[in-house]
Amino acid sequence: MEPSKDQIAQWFKKLQDNICRGLEKADGAGEFEQDLWERPHGGGGRTRTIKNGRILEKGGVNFSAVHGPTPDNILNALQLQPADFFATGVSIVLHPHSPKVPIIHMNVRYFEMTSGAWWFGGGIDLTPHYIDKQDAQSFHSQLKQVCDQFHASYYLEFKQWADDYFYLKHREETRGVGGIFFDRLTDQQGFSKKQRWEFVQAVGSAFVPIYNKLMLKNHQLPYGEAEKEWQMIRRGRYVEFNLVWDKGTKFGLDTGGRTESILMSLPPQAHWEYDHRPAEDTEEYQTLRGLKKGINWVDGADY
Image (cartoon, rainbow, N blue to C red; front, side):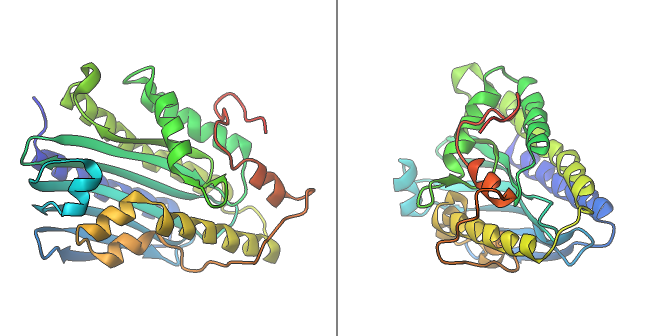
C-alpha cells in the first residue's frame, strides 16, 4: 500500500527520535533540548537543539509537518496551480568543536497538494574543514550502497545533483565534498510512491552510523589556533551558501516557517577575512583544491 501523509509524518517523528538518541550516545555529554512550535497558518513542529557537547558545539535535528494555502511565489516558482499544501520532514545540521570533524547536513522531506501532486526530496552532504580523502571515500561509498539497493542510476544521478546544488557560484567552489541530493521524486519513470518512500527511509536511517563514525574517528585529533581560524573561515562559507543559495531556507521563510528553526543551521561563530589565500604548501590549500564538482570520491579522489 502507498504511504499516507500521516504515516510519513509519524515515521519522520520516529526518525528524529532515533537520530537524537544516536547522536547523544556518540557525543557522550550533550543532550538535545526540545522546543515545540505551531505555525499560525497550519501545522507545527519539534525543534531539537544541542550545544556545548563533548564533540558537537551546536546542532539541530528538526521535525515539521505544516499545511495551508500555498503562497503565490511558491506556486509561480514550481509552476503549480493554486491548491493547499502539506509538507513534512526532518532537517539536520551539526557543527562540531573540532576543525578535524566535518560539518554535516541531512534533509528528508515529503510534499503534497490537494490538487493531487506529491513528491519526495532530500539528501546528505558533508562539509569538512579539512578534506580527508579516506573519510570522503568512505562517506560516498556508504551513500552509494544505500542508493544501489534501489536503482543503479541513483548514486551517480544524485551525486551530480548534489555537486550542482551545493555550489557557491560567487566563490566558484563546492560547499564541501558533496554527497547526494534529490528533489521532486514522483511515480514517474516506473517508480511507485512506495518505492520512493522506502528509498527516503533508507537515506534517513543511514545518517547516524555514517556521522557517528566520522565523529568518533576524528574528534581527538590534535589542532591549534591556526586550524580553528580556518574552521571559522570555512563556517563563513557555510553561512554564505545557506543565506544566499539554499532553496530550503527560502522555502521555509516564504511559507511562514519558524525563523529560529530555519536558521538553526548557522554555526555559533564564523569569520570572514578579506581575500584569504592559503599558501600552496598547506593543508588549507589542498582542501580548497578539492572543492570542485565531478570528483570521483568512491574510486579515490584525484585533484
